[in-house]
Length: 249
Image (cartoon, rainbow, N blue to C red; front, side, top):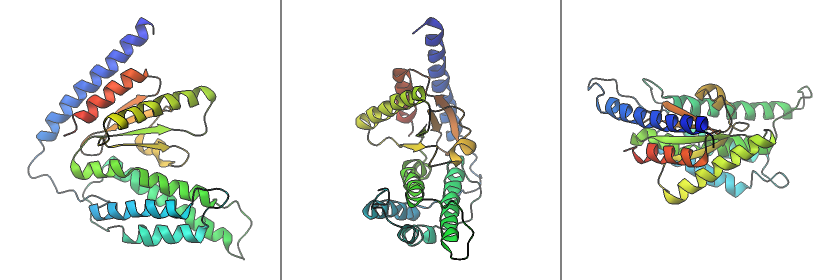
């Protein structure tokens, strides 16, 4: 690694650590009369979300040859989570919650398009495949650690990868996935998750991700504090993530 790259990586870690200290200070000095924020996805909703994940797995909905059909997926979605989603009055949505809300809306639209295409009187069109809808739902379920971190006022991290990318991009994604696996193995309680931009399409615009792969580091309020792109060295990314998540309480 040349001196320019090394200097750049050191600067990223230094800025990240400095930003963490500043955030800790701001988090401890919130006005006492600040409006009470009611999370969009309540703790009870999180239980339903976990149950939805188990149901989708039981359906085998990701199996492209013997997966569940649209009707079974929709039933699991509506009965298992969507119809139970709390209709709370939210004073201010965090970026994590807006992102989650847009993914929920995406799943609703995919199911609506699939049903519309299945009507006898509908014009021929390309309908969403069951496995694509199932993948969008399963990806939402995988965001549970980030959603839960908002309730616990903890920092969290999200790795954004892509299943449709050039070979060099695939290698970068694989490198960062190894970082993810290593950190989870060493720190299983760290709130982290992974999403594929092709299955969670709101991620690019909502979180302003400009490179793949990228790590989005959320502060205790669920706001993106820093984004680390996948061009960083694995050891530097690992050190920055462990420092960020280790100081989340």
